Length: 337
Image (cartoon, rainbow, N blue to C red; front, side, top):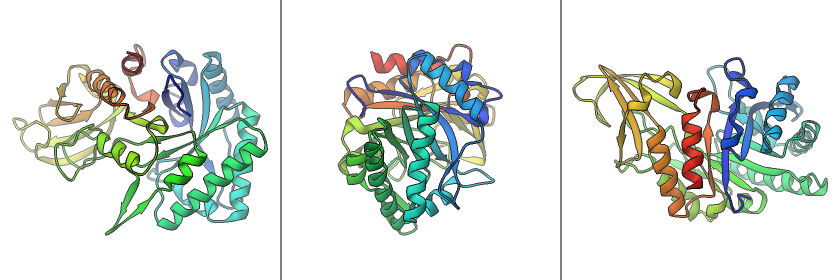
């Protein structure tokens, strides 16, 4: 579980290894570090491990810093693949599910991981959710049977329900409570326009926000000590319709995609918006919404003062300024103080 000191988590992305190798992870600012991601073979249910030496380098760095290392499975969809497809197939089949569970434990023990994280982003149907509940139950049972002493966690949608057309599908809160040590709430990617994509407070009734997501999970019955709030180290860029109309919600002509914090020009000098607890930067017709030092500090203070969560995680380590690790330090300091 989160424990008295809480979770200070960070996702290290294998796909960024060439620009941010594991040796550069600032372990002093974290308690739990996630190796992200490994895939699942939909045919036999086993994990796809293709970078053994990289994993060993990650483990050397993390355990050398006396931190916990967690193997994260799945991850967000890309332009070429959707890891959730294989997870859904495997979770639905008892034989493949058992093979998956044994494979995860085998690989965790082979490399010395302290835990396993299921990043199923995201289930598509309520049947998927039911299979997820069964997977968590069987996973915990098998870990206990094998006396593996592994943490079990999952990365989940910002709220306990996911909209699917005119209906919503609901996460298995009871199974999560009984079988997982904590869940990582993906508290970002909310807004489709010039807004704070990781806002803690929503400035409009229909948009998502950190506090709404946390409240949703609390109302579903998951205790605060098992809720870990997500903080993005990336922003989103738009092209403004009028450079003189550049506040939150300003009209745009295009959405220009995701931008790592370290590629946002002048990010440290952006405007802090207290109503949403977020930051933005406008330069001519370019507009960036993101989290910076100020918003991260206030977001964590707000959540911790309210006893809303048991910790935080950041995504992803290679996206911040890699020299001073300003954002990692700000998050750690805010949680500790």
